[in-house]
Length: 135
Image 1 (spheres, rainbow, N blue to C red):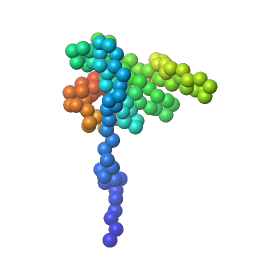
Image 2: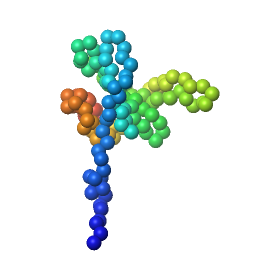
Image 3: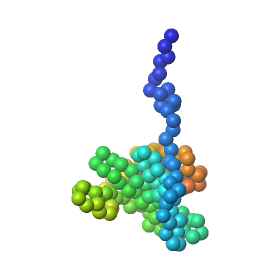
Image 4: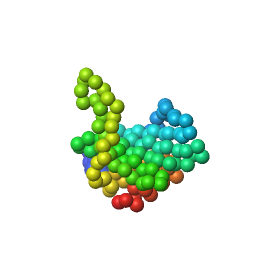
């Protein structure tokens, strides 16, 4: 007798994709930076000398290109389209952030929630609370 697999069973059987921390991150004097990666989203978090989170950035992809959503303590969110700077095989420029329009808040919140299971609870909850306040 065969086994029937439904889509919901299939999704439950798949390994959960979560953020993995990149431990090889160049640090800048006076602050600490952590970088987390998943196949479809990245998270960079900055801390001050007192280990207080001062900024985070979610880098994600839409069909028309890469985006960066940055939150800074004291000023809130900014949303950018990322120009990777590598359009030509003859030169490779540094990436540039250009102001971008509407943020897909519900999509971004759900994507972050799906990938955040590997983060410390206080970090995950802090970022989720910022995203939920906008949704």
